[in-house]
Length: 575
Image (cartoon, rainbow, N blue to C red):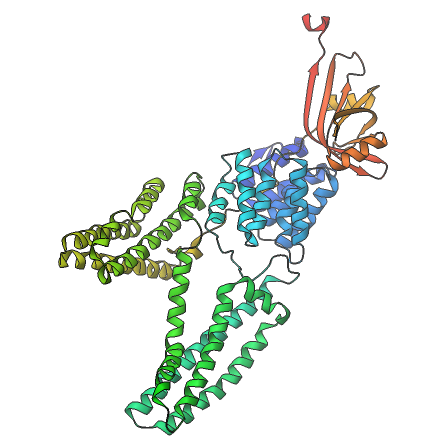
C-alpha cells in the first residue's frame, strides 16, 4: 500500500492500465491535471499499444496550457487507434490551436463524425470550429444536430446561444486557418489600432487648437503654419507603427475579417484627409461664403468622427444577432458559463429596449405625442427574457430594467394625457438607465470582471476526447483467435452485406481482418462494420464486435466501439 502525489491510497503495483486511466480521468475532473498526467503516463507504460492513455496525456497537457506537448500524444493516439472517434476528436481539439493546422483539425473532426454519427461530440467540435471562424450559420446547424442527439449537452447549448448572437471570436481579425501565429497578427492589429487612435486624437486636438488660436487670439497665420506642422509630425508616427505590423501580406484580409478594425483605420485616414482639406480651405484669402458649410463640415468630421463612430458601433453591436432566441437556449444549460452569458444577453436585450424607447419618444415629441402609447408594448420581450433567466442576483440589471419599465409607462402616460411631468419622468428614467449601465461598466472595468457588453461573452470549451476505449476481455479475444468462422457485416448501396473473413486480435485490442475485395470498396464509403464469431470450443455463445474498419496495407483494422456477447438457445440454458 502507498500514497501517490494526489493523496489517493491503493496498491498501485496491482493496478492495470485501464485502472490508471480511470484514475487519471478522475483527477482531471477534480482539477488536478499535473497528477492526472502522472497517472496517464503510468497507464501508457503498462500498455504502450493502448490509445486511451495517450488521449489522457494529451488532455492533461492541454489543461496545463501546454498545447505543443498535447499534439504528439494526440497524434500517437490516432496512430494506435485509427478508427477511434475519441482519438480523432482529441487530435482535432489540439490542432485547432496550432497555427497552420486548422484544415487538419476540420478533417479529423469530420472523420470523427463519420465514425460515430450517433455521438454529439463530433458535431459540437465542428460547430466550435465554425464558430471560431465566424461561420455562425454553419455553427448553428452543427449545434442543433448535436442537441438532437443529446438535448442535455451543455457545450452545444451554450455555444448555440453564441452562434445566435453572432458572437465575435476573441481574435476577429485572425483566420485560424492561416499558417501564421495569431500572436503576430495580434501585434499587427494592435499597431493598426494604436495608429488609428493616435492619428484621430492628434488631428482632432490640432483642429480645436488651430480654430481657437485663429478665432480668439487672432493668430490666423501662425495657427495655420502650426496646423500644417502637425501633418508633418504624423509621418514618423505612421512609420513607427507600420514597422510593428510585420505581417503586411495579411493586413488587407485582417481588415476585411474585422470590419470595425477596417472602419477604424479608414476613419483615421479620412480624418487626416479632412483635416488637410480644412487647412487648405482656411488658407484661402477670400473664402466664398458658399464654402463655409464645407469648411465647417470638414472640421466636424475631424473632431466628431470618433465619438460618432463609437455611437454607431454601440448601436450596431446592440442590434446584431437574435438575443431572445440565444437566451432561450442559454438558460437551459447549467454550466457556469451559461449563467454569465445569460446575464450579458439580458443587458443586450435591455439595450435594444432602451434604444427603441428613445427613438419612440423622439418621434412622439416631434410628430404625434399620442404615438408614445406604443411604449407600453416595447418592454414586453425584455421582461419575458428577464423572467425566463431569473437573474435576481444582478442588482444593476434589475435597477436598469425597472427604470426602463418606468420610462415606458411614464412616456405612454405623457403622450396620452399630455402631462409634462410624465414626460419628464419618462425621459429622466431613460437617462438614469443609461447612467446605471455606465456605472455598471465602470465597476466591471475597475474590478476586472465581466461587464455588460458583448466582449464578456464566453465560449464553452469543455474537454473532448476523454471517453474510455472499448476493451476486449480474454474470453472475446480467445473467441476471435480460435473461431473456425468469422463473419464480417457491412453496408453498401444495396443494403446490409456479409462476407467471410479471417481475424486476429492485436495487443491493443484491435481486430485485424482479411476479407474479400468487394467488402473493402464498400467499407471505404461507410467504415462502420460488425464482426461475428462463435465460441470455438462448445459453441454455446456468440460475440459481436461493432466498430470502425480502415484499410492498412493488406488487412482491415477494426477499432471496437461496442462488444456484445450472447448465448445460443439450447439445452445448456436449462442446466
